[in-house]
Image (cartoon, chains in turn brown, yellow, purple, green):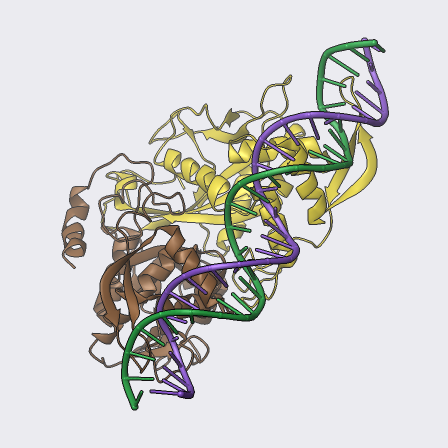
Length: 269
Length: 269
DNA sequence: GCAAAAGTGTTAGACGTACACCCATGG
DNA sequence: CCATGGGTGTACGTCTAACACTTTTGC
């Protein structure tokens, strides 16, 4: 395909792929602690035939990295996340043992509880809890570990929590989710006060009647409060897209023609 | 990167390159504020012939991304930084207008004042202050902006400051550097107390006699206090390399008291 | 009424900030 | 002896962890 070459395969120029880690909050079952969940796809070809792997695919030359990640995700898992962010790029030669060198640009996506609930069960796609993963193909376990590490250590919670919780929510749900992410106990009373004082939430007016105790007020995140707060960044040229993550960045180029189709696709969902 | 051949068709599979942003503290000149500095190389071929650009080159199939970044850096600028970290991967098709699609994995490097001072002036390489950059080739301005943004917003200072300051240092130097990074005034007295209380510094015993006032004590960072503290992360398989950043952070780092105290120590005021 | 969760109050300490102050030195 | 930066003291506001407490519901 690219320039007839007599050299070995491992000296070919590296191929580029896009891989995604999709995270969600495990649906509530009874009253146990809720964990983090992620979907894996079963491989249908060699190598690692039959093993579980992260959704991914090759990078198309006419697509941005983010577009490729989004499209690959949608086609393999039917998920259309509103939050997508570049994680890390893996390119060590040892990851493709003997094969063509492969550089994988990895993204992570966050989806809310509601979106997960609406999913049709799909052949060759299955969800696993973060502490109960099967053996993964390639170095995908490393990638998952990094996504979880980043979720817990480097990410600023409000933005992430917002994506994972799904609206509307009770303060207790938000609290449980934050505990799941942080992996530690958080005083409910103080958490409630902090969140309310932050000004990020607004009451929907509704109440949640579950169980036999006092109903809890429902909240949502206020529009715009998480935009342009300096915690996120997007390369110039991507501003046209309306994934939630995208905030401000050095604003210049408006939506490029090449991007407009995706732009509308993302907008109407 | 920058080996793109403009005559190729834009539907070829994307090429992969590695690009680096090298940051250092501008040498003291008189008593003005010190700024951040970075080296640029003048392009010797089309496109953007004669313009300034970031050092970079193609990814070799038998090298890891980090190795490639390091080697490219060393060969173009003679710098051998002890700190190298992946920044972001740029892959938008519009970045190579008309040329072959190019994916650039960007790294940043931090070098101490001493290392900069030892450099031989080199043809086609020149240092520029962060607030006085010339027009850059490709989208390299975006990359530099991101590096600076990340330096100021997302990076935990201690590790970064350590690389940039060079040892030994006076508390005032450390203070000046932190102000340069943060871009705002920081109370010297409180800064001093926080740094000393953090337990990350140790006195060398020496003093610095510059100017006509009381000599300042010299410090260095204590060994090990910044290792494996959960703030950094390295993909498995890279642990063998000897760059400073590389510690060994399999994703299960427990409590990091030393780190959090230091992070707050450096970040606030 | 009772259990369970929603929601409120209160306190003690940790920590950041501002700024006044003393100390050591070279000129 | 004084200008300059090195280095210390201190008082005050803010944030937060800890936990006791009241309220509202279903059964």
